[in-house]
Image (tube, rainbow, N blue to C red; front, side):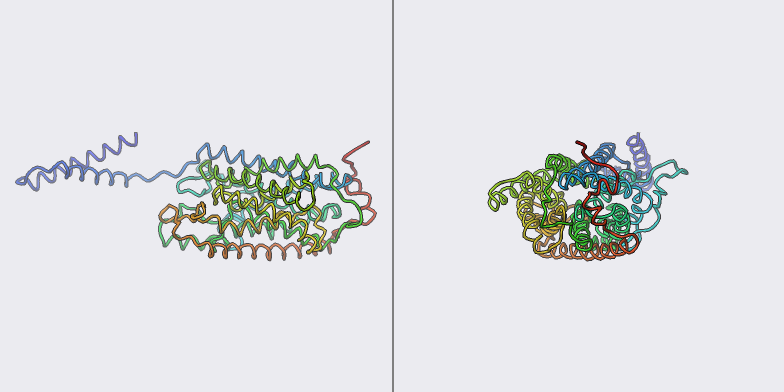
Length: 498
């Protein structure tokens, strides 16, 4: 219908143009076919200009994919992360870990919808957004009876804003839950919850805004709008840091908060004197497998579209996790004489962490190298580095998420280079890749700045939050409660009955 209308307008314009030229230049020869074609083309262009371009409409396939991606990210946390952590603590503390992960997830989802999303993903300043989307206000417009949309990474492609809200909310919730692994088996449940609320508000939300917020590709028309729209983006985004799915926002952010907590709360009773071996590696293996499966939603979903970049992230996630598993086991076999189940699942998580910031930016070869390096470096992180730090990081959150996140963030700057099979940088003015402009050295420096800002920001917020919680309600259980186990003393339940 639209094409017929345009052709009709073009025909009218053509007849008018031909009539005018006949009236004015009757003595001249008839217009040539080429001239008539030019007039017709100009008329059709004019007709096109008369009709306003319709607003982009969300693609049902993209929307469906993002809903599925969100569901499997939720499965990463509950039950994935809960079982992974739960199996690695002693049996008397199994339920406490499940309870902490489950309740933190629920709490953060509520806070995300109340104010977190608004402060993270609306235009405001370089560190925080605004309150325009408090309680998700404004997404549904009752006057026009329409829902608002959210930008993706492609011009003219959008998502329903609600699906972007829930996808990003699942990220926020699992990030806060990761932290509890560092001080497992000794913190008060009430203290954990209060700390999570404070840290979410003053660390996760601003870092998500700093790293990921921008006004979207459709706002960039030329060099001038590139500058003006870039100035509205988050502080770290403006620097040009690359973080496809959360190396800084999720992993480094949560890991340093956990490490600070391990120092502030102190070691478990009997640490280095009593056996604190995992009570059920079977549970942890099931949890790790759910994490691996769910990570495809985490990484491939971060493309925000069901497109080739999502598939690239999917492939890279699979390759890196597998390579890191084998690298960790090989290193462990050499160092300790035997490969272990705990090593296998730890290696897989290390690979997933390392590839997260790079998954949609590097080629499969880069993913293979990243996974291999990540497995070996994180093996050192939970052994050599842990001894150097001297903190009782119960479930090695910093050794895996911190070390893996830092390595992944820095090496993203290397392997995103087009010369090494990466995607390079995308120029939204010309709307195509700009491989000639990529500098590995410059990008690694930008990545290092992002890592440093994340460590300082999150570490500072975490320290202040722990101290505040300790003053208000106390962080740690009594020795008697810790000896008896958190399941009974904090929740009046037991995971197992004989």
